[in-house]
Image (cartoon, rainbow, N blue to C red):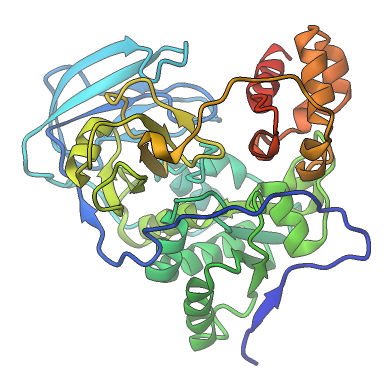
Length: 442
C-alpha cells in the first residue's frame, strides 16, 4: 500500500495555540544552483556545540587535510571537530570569537588551495547499536537547526524508550531554505539516515514533519518513499499549517503525534526523538561516504545581497568572505546570523561560520525597524501569540524587579525564545531580551 500525506494532527482540546503569520520571504526556495566557497583561511572555534569544549589534537605549523581530526574531548556531551580545508595550522589561540563574553580556543588554518581530502576516511561498517552511536559521534554531527546538541548524545536511548523518530522539516523562520533544499535534493540521505536510526536504536515509527508552504519537497519525499515501499514502510509524512513557530520541537511533537511534552521534560519522556532534516541529510552522507561534518549549506539572503543563494561553506569560513563571495548591493546596515525571529545580530563580520549556523541575513535599513521601547499598554497580544501559553509581560515585570524565583515559577524556563511576543508587541518592548536575561539569572 502506498504512503500518503497526512494532515496536521487535530485534537478536540486545543493544546497547541498561539503563533503568528509571517511573510516568509524565502527568495532562495527554488534556487537550484549551490555554489561552493573556497576561503583563503578558516577560523574554527573548539566549542560549537552544547557540552564540553574540545581540545586541539594538532599543533601550530601542522599540515592538515579536509576531514582530518583537529580537536576532540573525552567528555560524553561533546562532538569532535575536523579540518574543513587543507593547509597549514597558523595559530591556536583563545578568543571571544562571537563577542558573547565567552572565550574559546580557535584553530586558524591557512588554505593551500587544494582542498585535499584526508586519506584515512572510510565508509563506516556498523554491526551493533554501540558501533552505530560511535559512528554518529565520529561524524561530528550536532543539531544543525540551531541548537548544536551532539547527535550521539540525543540518540543514546534505552531500548524501548522511544517509539517515534520525527524528522523536523518545518523550517518556519523567514528567509531560510536550507532544510527545504535538502528535502528536495538530498532526500535519499535523509530517508536512509532515518532508517539507520530506527534500525539500530530500535524505533518502530518515523515521521517527516513539513509545513504546507513546502509541498514540492513533501511530494518529492513521498515519491521516493513510494518508490521503495518496503524499505520505507514505517515512515510517514505529516503536513502542518505554516504558522510560526510550528517548527519548535515541542510543537512539532504535538502537531505530528498529539503528545504534549510537560514543562521540564524532554521529548524522550513522551516517546519521541526529533532531528532536523538537514542533520539527517548530513548523517546519511556520512554513513554513505565516511566524510564527517566539515561544511554547511548556508542561506545568504536579505535586501543587501545582490543575488540571494544557498552556498556550501567550509566550517570556520569568515562571514566577510561569504558576503564578498555572494556580492552586496551597498553598505550593510545590519547582519544577522540565523533568521530574523531567533537569530543574533553580529557586531563583526570576522566571525566564523559554525556547525549550527544555517543563514546569514544582510539587510539595509528599509528592511528592518529599530524602535524605542514604550510602556506596556496591557493589550495581551503577547499572551495571545505565545505558543507555550505564558504571560510574557508578567514574566518581564518580575525579571525587572529581580524576582527571578517568581518568574521561574510562572514558567520562565518553558519559554522557547521564538520571538512571537516581540514581533506582535505594539509598545516595541524587547521581551525576548528580558526573558533571556532572566533565564541566564536562573
